[in-house]
Image (cartoon, rainbow, N blue to C red):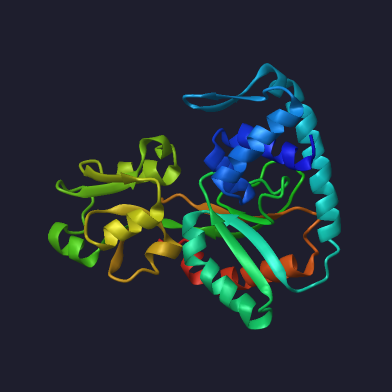
Length: 293
């Protein structure tokens, strides 16, 4: 098995579908299918078994998984070492974050960056899955929770507040008293109900009926702006949107925003340039980020 075989094997084992594996490696699904066939032909044995719920490791696949992951770790370490000495202020920097940060902050960050370093391209990846910096799935990560472990360099960028919002049209129809009956709630899907903001929203609207559930705060913000109901949003999104008013923020949960980078890449000029643009933009947006009651 060569390195391409190992990468393909690990991608399918992790994503469990050819389409997901293809996206993670930046290739077509048909290409990934051919790679899998070629991999097993060269290996002379089946490492992955297709099931109704996705690809599963065979017994042999389980046996070689650890070796494949060690090969990957060594290859990535070599890549980081080489790239860490890249002195060009050009090239691609991959940033992974949540959709709200991607839409609310990243355009201004990239505008700052392009004004000084037009040769740098930023790939912004907003996925529910946390992409791995150690496996080089991304170069920088902006997350709403602290990073675990000690293999990354992380710093807290800001503390963000949240509040309950509704459109001016909705408030005209239903009023501002959240304890009154007749309110309509826009909230997250049930598997995200553990989030502190969501629990707080439910406590503040004891009599509200739920009209919409969604796994995206961007979509909830759009629905609230259209007058469909009341929802909880980060202040840096809700205060920024037109035709929206803050109804309540006292006692709302706070969220820390963290930036992480692998230590081998932190001093690479183009990555340093993106970090500096991020720091400048978060500082400029302090008024929207700071929790306010």
